[in-house]
Length: 296
Image (cartoon, rainbow, N blue to C red; front, top):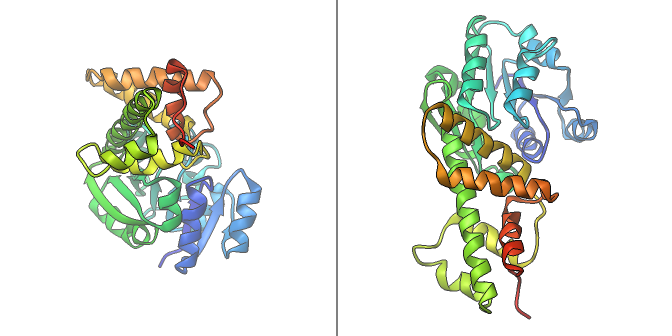
C-alpha cells in the first residue's frame, strides 16, 4: 500500500485512523488536537504538517468539521495542495456542499491531482467497528485506488457519480436520518405523555413497518437519557443548513427539512449542540413537558 495521510482526528477520524494502523497502513497524521496526534503516534503513526503530508503521501484522507475548514486545510497557504504533485489523490470524507466539493476537484485537477468527495454514514460506532458506508463522487480510477482503504474503514463504498455526487448523497442521507429522529422523538413523547412505557412501545413497533435503524439506534439511548455524542447535534445542524442552502440554490422546496433546521436552531440556543443527535427528543419533550424515559 502507499504512504497515506490522514487529517482530522475527531470523534470519527481517530478510530478510522486507528483501523488503518491496525491493518498495517503507513500513516502520517495531522490535527489541531495534539493529544489526539500523540495517541495516534503511540499506535504507530507519524505526524506531519499539512505541507509535509502533501509532499510525503500518495493518498490523503481528510475528515474535518466543515467545507470551509476542508478548503482551508487543502487549498490555503501552506496547505496540503501546496506540496502535492500530479498523480496523487485527496479524499474528503467530511459532510460538505456539492459546490464546495466541486471547487476542490477543479482546483486539484489543474495540477493533475485526483479528488474524491466521500462522506460517510455510520457514526462513531461504525467508525470504531470499521463498518462505515462511503458514498463517493469523482473519477472511477481515483475511487478504485481508494478501495483498499474503504475496505479497512467500512463495509460498503459506492461511486455515485461525478464530483459532488457523494456530497449530494450525504445530504439526502442526513435529511432521512435527522427527520426520522425527529418523528421518532415526536411519537415517543406522545406515547410517554399518554402514560405508556416507551420501552414496551419500542418493542411493540420495532418489528413492523415503523421499525428502522434509527429507531433501534436511538430509543435505547433516549430512554436511558444517554446523549453522549456518537454524532453531535452541531454536525447535524451544519449538515441540515447545507441541505437548506443547496436545495434553495436548486429551487427544490424542502418543507420538512426547513422545519427541522429550526428545531436544530432551537437546540443550539438552549445549549444542546454537543449532545448526540438523539437529543433532538429534548425539543419535543420541552413542548409537551414530558420525558421519554424508562418506567420504574
